Length: 65
Figure: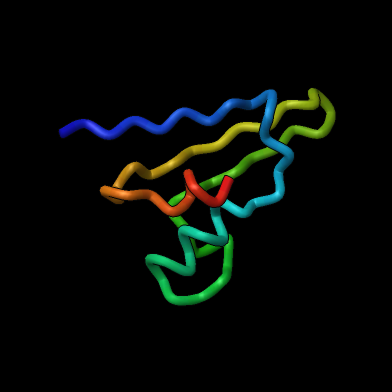
């Protein structure tokens, strides 16, 4: 089964709730740096993007957003 998660760059505020939810569920601590979600920003170009791991059957990052 292929899993796909798409992040809408225009709606994302950069709050990192998705990364926090992933770290709590999978790693037991609320630390966005320990998650399967990577958020990068370029403040000069006003660009933001996400890389989402797609390992979970029922991803908590999607419902946290």
